[in-house]
Image 1 (cartoon, rainbow, N blue to C red):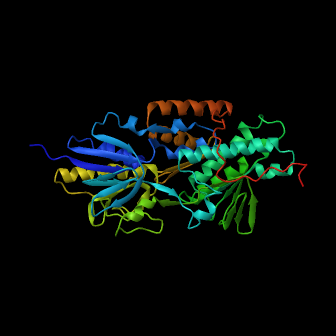
Image 2 (image 1 turned 135 degrees about the vertical axis):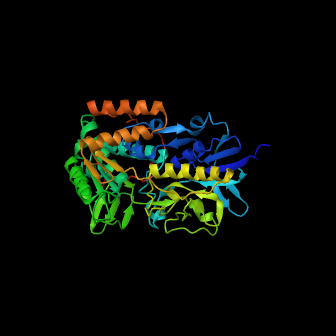
Image 3 (image 1 turned 180 degrees about the vertical axis):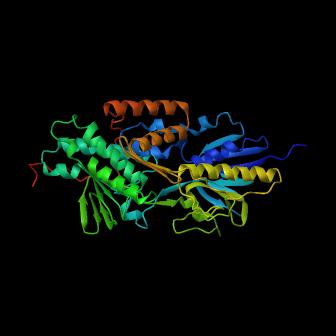
Length: 432
């Protein structure tokens, strides 16, 4: 007699959710994967969409396509509202799901340290394709508005960009944006000189990329400044307005502001009654990634705060999320086979961040790499983790073409809605 079918609900189609679903290829399991989007997104390359290096479809794959051959998976495009741990139910916007096992892999969103309502309208984050395409639109529009402006005093503000946060997202976006202005667009305009654009990188801490060694942080700072980025360290932001950033005594007038300084867990974690959360809303899980008191529920990925079995703090990066998704799935399979569960152990494969053309930093165990070799490693790692052969081929060709010609093909401005951060009207010589 066959074992009864168990229903596993997976919330989130990111690295953790996809890897959990793929691990559960069992005929006695019925899997429902829920995500508010219809695609899996390769977030590490979002900044390239924002800076016109890649098109949005290049870094995304439809979830249904990814899981099409796994017949025990049903994919739902829906919004998760709440989780009722006692009733073992998930409330969605359009329905309610009951589960035998639940994997919560909803990821993180941009965190504003308690100032979301004030700052998010002027300084959006970079976590979704919508945010990336909106940021690209606003960046390219700034150059177009400067070309149309007859009052040259407006050029400085329109061609000033501020990126808040000196982590990988901030560093990579700053490097890509200054290359866009000084290399890609330099011959495209007649009234303005795009190479005179000001790209500011503002970091509250004493150095960039704090997860890397101090020497690599200093290399990153020097390299960015050589490229033309104005780096401001030990400059915590105190105020953000429609066209300015205040960091202590430093005030920067800008047309585009990007917030890349923090993350917080998906707000659905607040509905997990009785489950301990940290200050950022991240779930504090048991060693096997289950929720304390609820062994049938697992939390994985960026919304988890934990130290693993070897006393290693698990970072919020794609490799860690993938490992956690697979581990949670293996514990479900262990239950079905009446085998004991195992604690999660994070396998740190190193950290890597690109700065710009032919420049990156990488650390693998005790090894440190800077410059071209680290950049080549960065490209190889990102191509490897991309889902889909088509995306890998297209992105490799884009990168090869951009390296040889300094050209970026995703510079089309689309959309008619107003920018998220209002840009004040351009002044002219006839206005008082």
